[in-house]
Length: 381
Image (cartoon, rainbow, N blue to C red; front, side, top):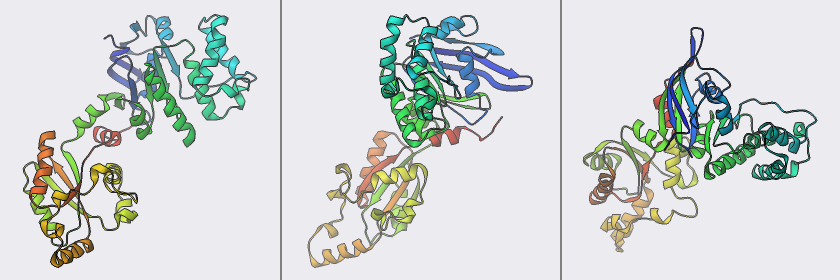
């Protein structure tokens, strides 16, 4: 398959300062690609070169098979570019704004009329068709500018910080629209500083810092590359007979276990401060395995076979043991583990075999923020 975007040694210098250094990047058709990095990293410079708005100092780039330096007209036919800052024209209605750009691309009037209505419906601006552009909110202007980039049905969309300055509702609406464009088969390159949004929209990312591309590829692949070991979160039923050290010792001796961390879960069902204070992936994973008031999901219901026989019974002694167990704090055990999926399955079996009352077991998966922090060094140009 021919890449929709390919760069080789793409470089842009301003005197002694290098805004972009030997960028080698390949983007396949149909991909929603996120370009992430701090301010001054080279994201906008790269996008402007691909959009034929900036001449590279060295190297070459192709968009849709066209050279950005020698075949700019061909590039502009297959590309739609939305800059981070764009202007609008006073005293121009919304439909006139789109009609102006459609005519600039040479679309006949008979085709433009129906196309404008379709684009306004796509970006949910049909009711503003006869309104003036300057009267639109910022979020509406962003969606209108996105519609403008689509008037000539480009294969590739380059969107530089499209959610910049938007309120929360407008961000959600724009995010949904970008996912819809990806589902329609458009290739999209989008930049943003909000990594959670990028993870929600994109399937591939490129991480850039000080003009250098540090990593590029599918998000899942990048997460695997930066994760040195697997993290497993295990929730244990309260058992007064098992102290933290006893639990840790039973877990620590399992093959493949690199480390053990135990945290009490007393009152976590009511959102204890100890849980609320956790941040990042651990907090998100914790919210998945701790049941709310409605109870745990079916796959996290207590495992009968994991209950010690003394508690599972019904004698008076058993009832006293059960009462003592209910008074003890539940535990969350975080295990750093080295092994494949089959060994992960064996880990669960080992926990049960060693008498640990497991009723929550899930792998803690890193996110795009983790990958970004591990790959970058926090340097700015």
